[in-house]
Amino acid sequence: MKCPHCNNSVGWFKGLKRIKTGDSKAKILACPACGEAVQRHFNWKLFFVLMPVMAILLLFVVRPTVEATGLSYLIGVDSGLMGVLAMLPCYYLKDAVAA
Ligand SMILES: [Zn+2]
Image 1 (cartoon, rainbow, N blue to C red):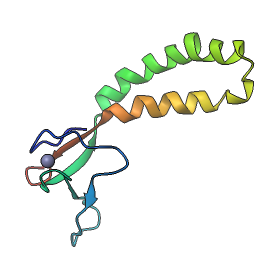
Image 2: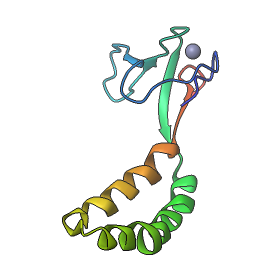
Image 3: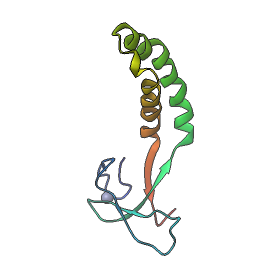
Image 4: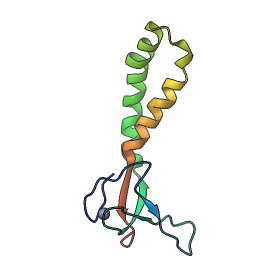
């Protein structure tokens, strides 16, 4: 995810700090590089484009590989993983002031 203020790429599980606001619904976050307020949004359009791609990859690439290597206990886990992989690129940061 890129910060809209300084174009610093922000990590997924670290970096962004929650800024305490009166309104608990508005999750205002702070960029670790410039400290400006940003908000995380979800790009549903991109998600609906990526989802079928991930489903095809799962059925024709991941699932046959899982079955071929005898790791059948990973069936189910693999579809969850592909779902997460489809979701992660859909998150983006937006200027919290302008939003
Ligand atoms: Zn920044």
